[in-house]
Length: 117
Image (cartoon, rainbow, N blue to C red):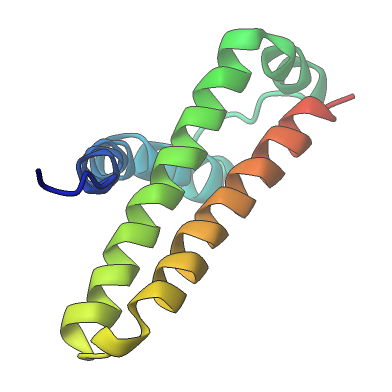
């Protein structure tokens, strides 16, 4: 019997993260990084954004966006190092650093979203 791996799960997270990174993240960057600072869109006041952030669905949405984007980036970086730079002998270390970094970033996102005043 073949050895079972978590590779299908990692490719699923990579795929979902790619969709999120392609569709949602550019809109957030466009709004909060360009349109609002340039004054093309009126900026919401602090209390309105804080009220929006207090809603549980907003927190879940932000958690999903952050976590899937980090999983996508970790998987892409892993295969860039593995295939592009041909450092296959460090596969275990690369896996630990890439996916460990994505996990640490996800934990930090949970902590920061939980600590909203």
